[in-house]
Length: 291
Image 1 (cartoon, one colour):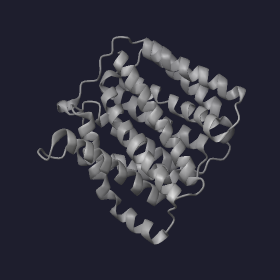
Image 2 (cartoon, rainbow, N blue to C red; image 1 turned 180 degrees about the vertical axis):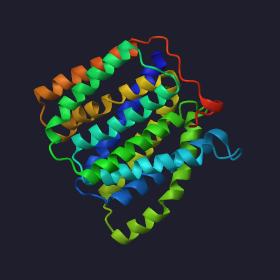
Image 3 (cartoon, rainbow, N blue to C red; image 1 turned 180 degrees about the horizontal axis):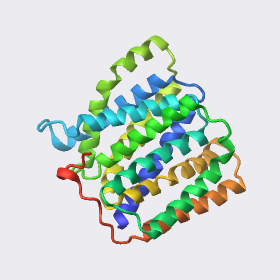
């Protein structure tokens, strides 16, 4: 349980870093959305590919699978395009609401039913998160919201497919390498757009290598110790972590609303996780975590 908690914390920090890096790169704009997605996925694939080769040598087939790689690609491109049209608060709410709906719905379908504590924790955490971002919900952009919802669904599918992975790092590397194949049309668009600056490229590489590649490998490793409900709830901490980091790194103001929301979100997550100390993960179909 302690190892799962530690790995989950690292993964959430990586996911929060992804949001910050995307905001810095795309809001500038220091880079266009297709280029950001291509550099992010390809750099992640290269870094993880080198780690995989160092660990396994030249033998063996490519781990991972094409459906997971496609889910990863859809998440990444929809995420980048959505942040061109949405503010950070609205985007984060739509993204994680979609992730939650996807993962909890699958858990309910597989009889991984939440108990009273998990439901209470979910209600507290989600309610606090809505309270945190509510000022940005007046007139959300419909196409941007649809793109972010698609990104959240794809991320939920990717997470669920990784729950039964026997080799988290290997599968993540293989999925990133495969996702690079889907980037070929985007690369053509990026070459014609000429919207890449050195700063934007560095931010995209940081997102791909550290926050995405290694972060997702850690998340894959943590998922077997979490129920679908817990995995969905704990991701509510990501927008809060990102907001706190923005205060520290981007000089955004600290507000009473932010402090209250942070306490309630983290308290709700703690309640949900502690309510089921003995975790019994959903049985992975056919032993490989695919859905």
